[in-house]
Amino acid sequence: MGQMEVTRAAEPHNVPLLVERIKEGDREAFMAITRLYQKKVYLLAYSYLRNNEDALDIVQDTFLRLYQKVDMFRSEKNFQTWLLQIAKNLCIDYYRKNYSRSKAYRSDEDVEEVRMPAQDDENSHSFSDVERVFTKCLDRLTEKQRLIFVMKHYNNLEYKEIAQILRISVGTVKSLHFKAVQNLRALMSPYMGEQI
Amino acid sequence: MNEKCNKIKRDLVAFLYEEIDNNTRERIRSHLDICASCRDELQGIKGVAQAADSLNDEMEKAMASVNWDTLPSRISDAVFDQKSALPLQAPPGRFWEILVQPRLKPVYAALFVGLMLGALGTLIVMRTSLLRESRGESFIVSQEFLDRVELEMARRDTLDYLEKSQYVLLDFLQASPKSAPQTWRRDLASQAAKDLLAKKRYINPQLDKFRMAKAKEICDQIEFLFFELTQVSDQLSEEDLQNIQDLIAEKQLLLKIKLLKKDLEESEV
Image 1 (spheres, each protein chain N blue to C red):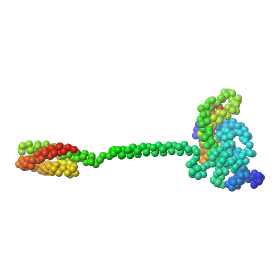
Image 2 (image 1 turned 135 degrees about the horizontal axis):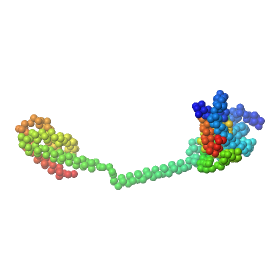
Image 3 (image 1 turned 120 degrees about the vertical axis):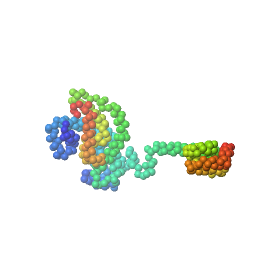
Image 4 (image 1 turned 90 degrees about the vertical axis):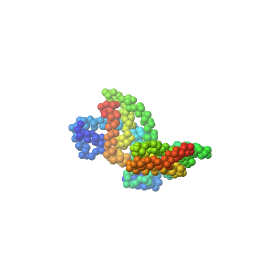
């Protein structure tokens, strides 16, 4: 199969065709699918784990799992949802395995230790201060709230897609997103003053 | 804050992220025009979103650091050519592969130690039991011992019965014919006399079992006498009572009781 043919096929509406060819062991089709979805998988992994190397590991593992389980994919399902389900599961496993302890350790350090400028000097906020406060507050959310916030804010996924990836109802996604924002606001308010 | 504000505030996050239908969006916009509290709430939510945006720069840098052109072929190489070199293990396909996973080693070790301890405990218990049997020790009481205990109990019960009967008969015989009816009625009406009849029924099987024929014969005579007198005592005349007293004396019932008691006392088990 020529490169042009793969490029042409690497459009969303041709995904079912590519998937069928991956089932037959077509390496070019596999690369085309990887090329099409690698950034979405990486963005989900990076926004959840916040580490470049770990995110790249997740990308590689996601596409490996895709290859191993491609026979289980049903054509009536949304391929991106199915792929992001794999990525999400890997992220959660990876986080529980490698980040839980360090998170517990970091929580001792607490948000209070992050230096914030005085409220009357808000224009002088350095970018990294807000970033660090927000990162620590994000870490304090529950697993599902953090996932939903990240999927919505950084991956621009719709509630409907998030619901399918997490296998919960749209209403639950909406409710958990609301709670995530409220919790972030409550956690950040002592350090952000009237900005929040 | 009214009911409407509460409802609007719950929709503000979805409103900000444009996850709301057109009608609701218009309703919220109209409400925000007139409600300062809800406007403040929206401002707070926007503050969280802005704080979240502070990570955008970092994410863009991270995205830019990846060579997206070569990544697919690298992943493809890893998947197609070097599957075994990948950090994540493929899920075990067969039952025995699940059983021999290295991470289950501590479980197997614990099971092995448990089995060994169980076997050792069983061995100790069985060995102690075997040793006890070999020494002829047993906690089980022999039938012979039980028989001896029962015989002793029968002997004592019979002695007790004879002794109490003796007292009642002595009272009856020593009484004058005039006072005998009162004494007799009083004694036979008493619980002691009734108890003697009941006790006789209790010792009957024991007398039969241990072949105490002589004792049984005398005890039967006493029982018969008590039973008859219990039934007819109210109608007895002084003359009848005198005849009964004579009969008891003639039969030498008290003497027989005395001799039997002596025999039983000497044959103590």
